[in-house]
Length: 128
Image (cartoon, rainbow, N blue to C red; front, side, top):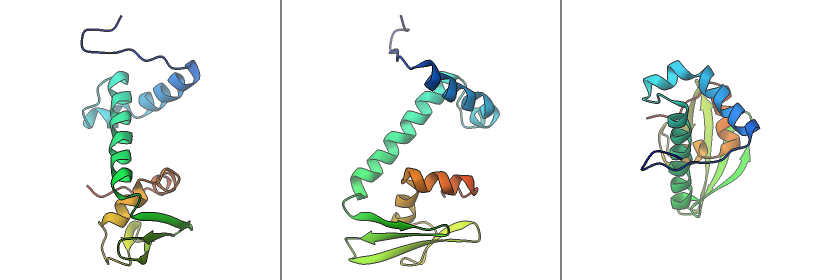
């Protein structure tokens, strides 16, 4: 039984092992972010996904992914009725439509799981 105020969650061993392995590998870095346990790590991941889903719910009807290349992402901005090109420049994302490094188009790109994986592998992090 979990402590009062908590709920338990059942995961397959394979899923548990994968997440725990990642947690153990990144424990030091996660501690700096205030994540001090495996349970805290899973909560941190779920909160991150919920935040991205909230962003998608807000902007998804307005923005659409058109294509992804190795160094650029093309989006359709249905509000401006324009095409937005987000390019990788100097190991950062840059929106050619807004001429900014931090706009709704860049935030949307970081919310695309397939694009986020590629950006993360190149060491490109979302601006705070």
